[in-house]
Image (cartoon, rainbow, N blue to C red; front, side):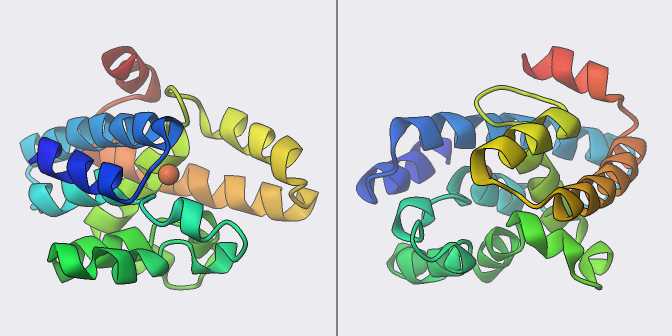
Length: 175
Ligand SMILES: [Fe+2]
């Protein structure tokens, strides 16, 4: 499965750095899915893993219109016959979506990939560090950064609690 999705990334000229990031998000997601499964949560493993590896397939094509990131992936992936659930998870992974009112009502699959994406850039890192880097790089407004971090911390708490794992354990397992 992984090989097939990696081929899709290569087909659409995904840069090495994004492939490395996506593989990290895949590893974090896989671990969390397994833990959640052990804790009795019903979670669609295949959809999560496919979305984790493919979530940035449109990144280079939406650079000038970042508001289309996550949405344009659907157009790219149409000929690849990727199922709707995977497309939905991809659409819901972009950072600002957490500021939407109904985000916490999203499925566990959506929330898991969202979270995994935020704690793995080129290696696993805390949400605080990720937001700090992002603020510097993209000139992110201080208030928005704070709001994002608060919401992400709330999500982190929910996921780690459900998966019965601490961030340090996760960090050790993924590094
Ligand atoms: Fe990503």
